[in-house]
Length: 465
Image (cartoon, rainbow, N blue to C red; front, side, top):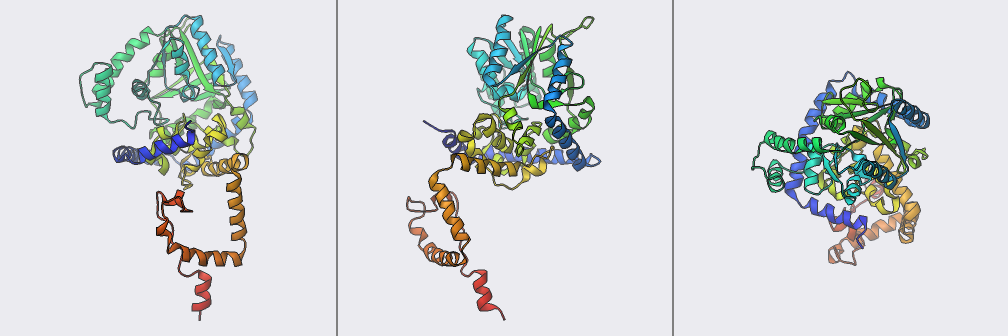
């Protein structure tokens, strides 16, 4: 049986050897960084904006129970049906029951990482319901039967030529390397899906407690069509998405757009508050909101790491992470890749199975420096490592570190260990890479550091005036 850790190592090694893919991802993110930094410079004070949204999220998470009650009351007052889901399986069941009650055969769906988290598409397809992603990037990776490569840019690992070949093979279109023509090919297919859909499913970027409204941010307009054309609309969102006031979005929207897509503000920002009201010309006849916990309240109960719930899914930490840049999003084997995925996934899916992700980091701190809501991600990676060692660490590993601690705290032992190390390093080439090599996990992919011929103390004693 292949464990998640073994699969991660296998997939990461394969991508790291793919020079074409790594070069493509590096080039794409380098261009994005230029655009992002230009937009950051347009802020009067970018750091003040980060502090503001971090404080707003801290306030929202601290009052999550009362804000959720206020949010739900506002929705229900306008005829929205609100459902509470303790975990992903229950959320899938709720949505499937709604679809079956409506005798739905086709569903159109806009971008939602929360739905990816609970594997909603798979659950619906298993029940014989067609599900089509309406976001262009999501649509492309769905045709490839892949998961999103990136939180914000799902198909960033594909070239226009690969997409052209895909469309020609699956949709029967003529080959083209023109991005606009490729977009028109997808649009022609998706427009029919909107019209045929019985249900539209959306995610949500924010939930406004003050007004009882769901806020969706996008750049393609596909979420608006997903919400407006089908007779039934379902919105799935995590309970942490709630904000107290509508005016909070005056800062959250530009910060999200800048950090996530290098824009001053996203192209479409829409509020949904309920089904079509009397006198309104469009909108769904029935509106359902599914609020997902899925261990989020367990994380809320952890005072040390609850600020992970502040994440607004901008993907900024992925863009700067040197590990993500070299192994890509699919290697992680989880919905959320990169630093935020390495921190969040052990909480959502289990620390024992996914503890390895917290070690997939250089601890350079670039993720913490870029995070728009000031989550200290590199500290949380260390905390996850500590928690994993305490709960699931091997006795042999604990013994090794206890011995090292004893060695490092004894000047006498450290002195002789250094001398023996210098001597042993001369003959390391005899066992390097073999089972006899004590440093084999390190030397399999890199050169071991050389022990200095003379320590500072030795130099000081011998060479000082």
